[in-house]
Image (cartoon, rainbow, N blue to C red; front, side, top):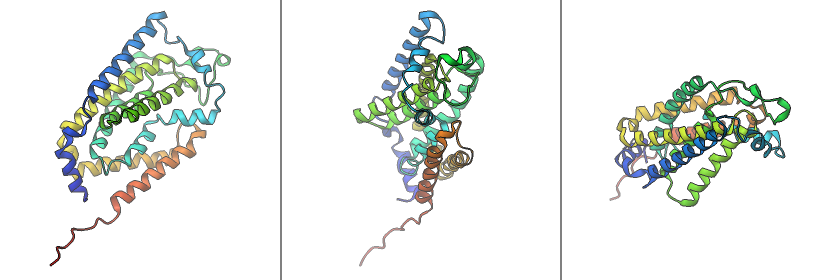
Length: 275
């Protein structure tokens, strides 16, 4: 099917594409996150609660494994993975772009507003495990967790199978936990990031359902081009963890090649009627 036809078809059914009950799922999960966050903070009024034992859970895991797991939550990596679905599911691309743009603003505002120091700035370096750089500022909320749960929320919006939904949630939780396991975030940062990410994903889904302009071929190709540029930046610049660079660069390169094949290969024309 030609791109224009694919976009027109997706635009016509954009309201029905989102799984029934998806918003109820997302608001329920965000409410659970809010309750967990309030409960944790109420125990001692500190971001530090539970950090040391939580961080120690991953001591047997090698640094390279934790580095790769945590970088799955890198926004550029998430975009690279989701981009391969853009040709077939353009509504997902719209939601992704909205979530990334809105999330970037929200995360920066919240990090500056709360100004919570990270574990390396507060704790004795010998008291916990640190993988990678000892980041000092902007702990709450976790940006990687926010991005991960934003994309997870969008995926949940288009998935109906219970096991697929459970797998998405478990995967997002594991990626978020890695931020504590590498020693750069408090547990409460993860809860805050998950809460914000779920709501952002729900907002992005709502926008994708109502914004017809996002299905215009020019708008679609513009969004794809920006995402491909993000891939190029990731390939050239790498990530914050040298151990994760080979895999994440491979993901970005593979994403770029798949997208090039999807959009640049000749599209068969209509078959001529037979006599």
